[in-house]
Structures are given as structure tokens and as C-alpha cells.
Image 1 (tube, rainbow, N blue to C red):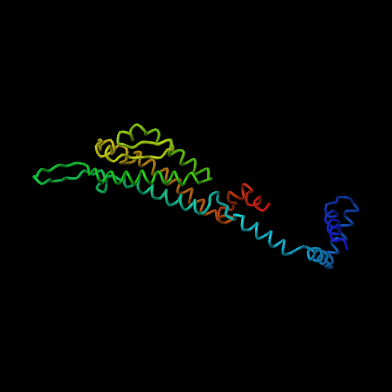
Image 2: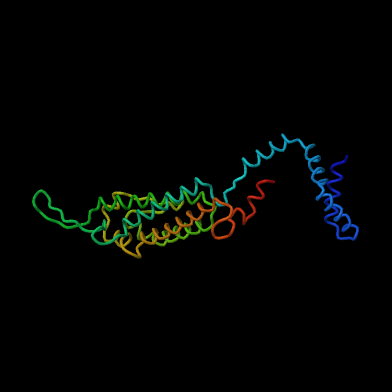
Length: 250
């Protein structure tokens, strides 16, 4: 029996809109009900090389990424970790009041002279951590394919460039790769009131960057939740929307 011919005949009859096609459709329906159709299919697929099919399937499933997130799990974790750190280091700088790193301290030297001034060493350490965390976020973002995350970081970089002049006054410069660098000696010798205006309080540079970092972190969290095909919002994730999961099988 020519199984290919019979299978093709069955399917072509299903696609026909003529009266003869309707007759064939009724005949096919009868074949399905009495089991003849199923036997024909089993006979056909018994002639297929099952080992070859399994081998091909295994190759495809190993390549396919069933995550509907735009980024890999490793990238998402790096984004979450780095943006969390930047948000936290920004908060340590912009916090005001009794817990502020910019709160002046009274110090008495060996001669008994009392002075009240900023703790430059403590402020530098906080700003250095902020700079390092900022650069880590940029590094993680470069690996991301999520437009919301990359747009958020572009906004952060552009805002930093706007503050380039003020940052330079406390020894912080912007490289060609948008990374920040800080010179310790220049920072400690600079006017700490300038540093305070940059990093302390709501509306400061540190506050704005921390806010943008927190937003990027929320986008990374959304990415992490798209590991399932169908999400709680009743829609498919990015890979399904783009058809990339389907295309990965072909």
C-alpha cells in the first residue's frame, strides 16, 4: 500500500469545497469512526525511522529556549543584583538627617582643639561604592536585549552626562564607554558642600540615579517572571510575541 498517497488523499479531501469533496469528507469521517483512519496513520508512521525522529527532536529541544524572557537567566540575575546594589548605595548617599553620611562630626585633636566638619573618608567610601555599582549596572545592561531595561539605562547615562561638569568638581569623570571613575585625592580635597549638593537629598544626582536603577530593577523582575509561557496577566511573554520560540524549532 502506498501510505503517502493515502494520507495525502485524505488531507486533500478535507480541503476540498466541491460536492465530490463533501462526499469524500463523509467517507473519511466514517473511516475515522470505524478506526480505519487510525490504522492507516499507525501503519504510515511505523515506516518512519523512529530513532532518527528522536535524535532530531533531542537536538531541537537542547537548542530551544523555552523561557519567554528576552534575556538569559544569568543576565537577568546580574541585572537584578547590580541594580539592587546601585539603588542601595544611592540611598546611603541621598539619605538626610541623623543617618546622613554628610552629617558633620565634631572632632577634638590631641591639642584639645575642637572642629566640626564633614567626615571626608566616610563620604569618599560611599561615593566610591556608588561609582562601582553604577559601572556594574552598565556592564550588566550591555548584555540585555530587553528594550525597557536598555532604555532605562540610556536615560541614566544621559542624565549623568548632564551632570558631568559638577561631577568633575569632585574628581569624578565620565569615560568614552560611559563608565565613571573617581580620583580619591581630588575628591577628598574638593569642596564637600559641592559633593553634598550632588549626592545628598531628594532631587540630587544620587537620588535620580537610584530611582532610575530601581525602575530598571523592576523591569528585570518582570523579565524573571516571564519564564513561563503563559503569564498571570493572561498574555504570552516576549519570545512568543516575537515568534522566536516557534522559529527555534525550524
